[in-house]
Image (cartoon, rainbow, N blue to C red; front, top):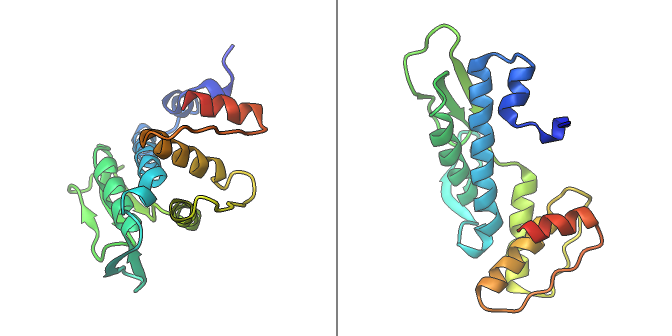
Length: 176
């Protein structure tokens, strides 16, 4: 018997009778997050970190990852038929995707959070100094950083041994 952990997002939303328009948008947001997770894992190794040289609508210095995340979310979520407009703190204007109809949605999003930027800074330190210590609470992304660094080293022909105490994490690392 499947548990809720085994249910796809689509099935979960349907089982709870979530409005189909909203469910479609939620699925596109999830797809965007997956795409960005891949970018974040390798950002420090592909010059996707640092300032973009521009300012957002809140007059904050934009980061390259903020600009990238905004583009990924805007383009991916635009595929949701129910989305009429996309609003982000990274751009001045509302991106109208179509003339709004009754029931259409408007998405306001700030795709990156502080934690992701912290993970990127840790990845950059690790790339510059292989003896970097990365500390943080459970769920903050330490293992993500370690796994990505191990992949990068292996891709460069290095022999890599990654050890961990947690058996669930070890199973996840083996899957790659």
